[in-house]
Length: 292
Length: 178
Image 1 (cartoon, rainbow over the protein chains, first blue to last red):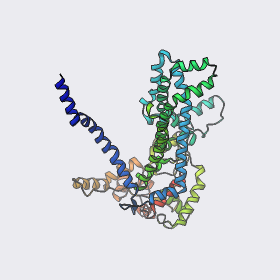
Image 2: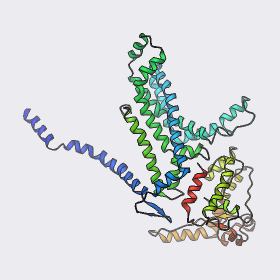
Image 3: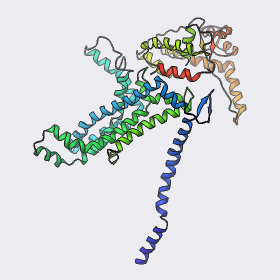
Image 4: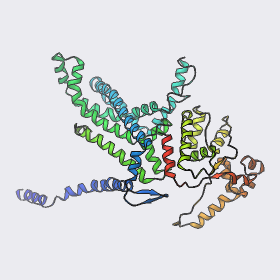
């Protein structure tokens, strides 16, 4: 017995084959599908387009174009603003919902959690189109308001503006916020809330000083999801967004499509990555990754 | 992008595909003036037809394809084009230099240029065809409807050219959209 275990430890200390063998596939996966594409993206972003040809010489022209064009600056600010707004609204919806499901869900808790995930089982496009049908000129909302007598004629104010973009984003990304928030509430010991009440803390104080600090990692984890998903999306703004409300994703898709300016598109993609990674860095320092 | 050329023609520029910085500034001003009236920038013909049918838009700057689709769906729609200030493009078939079946590709291109091929395209899209064989195949009445009875009309169209300062066009367009 002892000789066997000693030979095992000897072999392990010499060369941990199993460890390397199990690390290799994810490493190859990450290299081919993540690091190589990013390297390609970075190299394209410092090349330039000249007369419909990509010139492979180092230049910072693309980044200059992005920084010095007021139109592109507007798009960057709008995209960050939308992503932050959508994240905040989703937090505001997910907190009470997550609390209710974990506290009062009882034996229906698994069912309620499934209902939160259920929309993810239908196509993303279908969910965006549903909002077009609801908010449109002859849509569900206008028809309802007409029959209730609130409106005399259909209104165009619901669709194709910043409101419809934000609403659609809030709806389609909500599950990505609720799930980590539910997990955070599940980990919250009930005794702490009771103890807080026993010590005469009003509900608001209990929420602010006991619950909020303990569910914050869950909120931050959900915020990473919602923020980065909104930052990179181009389908929602092009389907339900304002005609003068394009986002970074639309600019990138047009640079790689009709505009045929891959270097500028790559530079824009790096800008998006930079913004998302800055958000990630802020959030990681608050300890959000434990709840992802 | 064709919209920029159309507006340039409207503003009286001779060559809508060769615009100077000041020309582009004028085009931009005009487009910004029009922007409040815009409900949606359409991206596919299907989307545009849907926008009409759902009552979102009543007027669009578009190709004949949408007119054809909507007329077939018996949607009340008409079409007009600006006299003498037309833009247009021709679809092209190209053979890759690495083609393994160049002969088959040539046969296909021959077919597309023939009367049958042209008629097929025109029936589906409502676009004008490119060959006199096509004009014969659809008959003189339909040819008149598609402005093909007199192919010299086509020489009045400002056909799409590759634009030298295309990145400026793209930037202008993004400014209109942002």
